[in-house]
Image 1 (cartoon, rainbow, N blue to C red):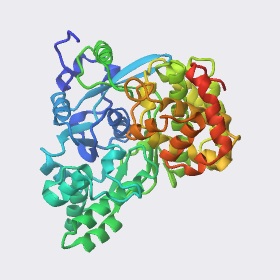
Image 2 (cartoon, rainbow, N blue to C red):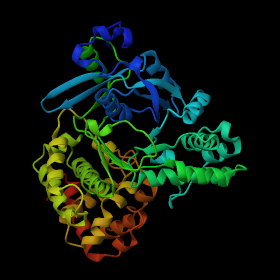
Image 3 (cartoon, rainbow, N blue to C red):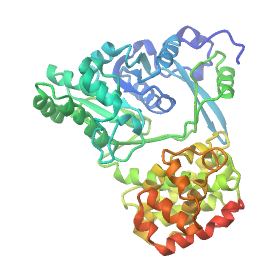
Image 4 (cartoon, rainbow, N blue to C red):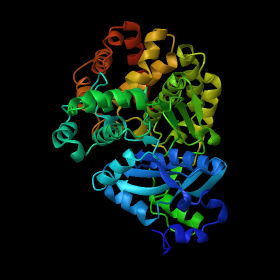
Length: 482
């Protein structure tokens, strides 16, 4: 633990090196953006873009952040006058600086009245969210899961008793529509395909399920005065460690209880569909485009796809982190070759696949970011069908040998180990996946696993099944043979 007795707050900023102080005067900002989801990613991503947009334009774009569950996190941020530090770690070294774009820190349930007031405030023209895919409470078809216990409890409690983000957001927007307040943009920053469309569906679904007397009026006004732009967000932000806290304190000269660490790279692509005013995020490099779909598919199939491939093959080879996997003799070749295999399935108006792969190689090699393969490889039954299987279907058996090897890495990783899955990854379908290994030959195991993740067509593709099974002996011996 740090021996520094001075904690980070506005009074302590004079102790912080001048080049590490906020780019804005926090006291001069007003809460014009409401953010739902007080996690490390928001503090290393949207909050940084917003501070720099405010500094570039002189406009007082402050953020009120809301912690959906942890009142302790909101309290800790308030104790620091809503200041925290970001440390960027690259191959050339580290840089630590304080961010001052947040002006208010709230907890969703204890501070519900204030959250509702901000949702109704005409000055608040943007709501952003990082609540994870799970926080949307969606059925497989994308509609609101009204049978989810949390959603059902919200619907039973009424608009004043909502405890989920979706319920509170829907109730607050409904109240704003009834009051005839200014239009507002609701911007999902979660890592989901068509995240704006997904969020709009569950918000409207909640209003429909709540069925207030003026439901049709509210829904009509939501359609006219609220937009849900889709976005792509990208920055690797590992979990903060005690060593990270020590390093931040040493760099700042004061102790920060809530530091975050990230790679130097940041990307934010936003659909140009805003209902009212917004920060000029493009002044800090954000892209505002007519359609985010080409960027979304490129990120999903190249970045996320390569991440998963490095995870499963790296774990088989005994690596621990992404940087470890890249330090092998095959890591860079894997990323570049996988990109070449995927490229024919990507839209022509998106990023150049070869250039994107070159950036990935540099990012993944970064020794300052300790991104655990076990973490990346978890929830494979949810990730693999979206990241890899459409490419295999589109290109056909034998056209993507590196992608097939990666899929064999996932098959190998589902093997039961002493504690759960072989490499310590977790998965909501772990039991069903483990059952595929019991008393079956390798090809039967592969077919069972593909069936279990909703790919019976691929399970019935003999050439693919034979290819995957043929890779398993080498992977079991810790060899990655490109």
